[in-house]
Length: 86
Image 1 (tube, rainbow, N blue to C red):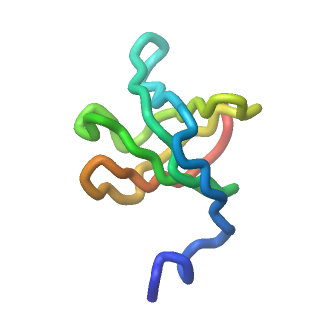
Image 2 (image 1 turned 180 degrees about the vertical axis):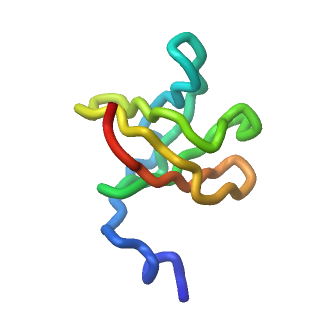
């Protein structure tokens, strides 16, 4: 079964859309959003080892800062699931 078949909601491409992975109130990691849906996103980070399994994702221009859980990692790409706004 392919990824598209497992997704609960349609992903919208946002290639090159800047965002921030908020690790703590002071620590952030820049990232790029490849695509996003109502339930999650695929992001690219320069150093994926800096990104913990749980974090907040601040997407430029988005009204909410969702809390995220990393669902998968592949090189510098991470698939994340949203589990609620802050």
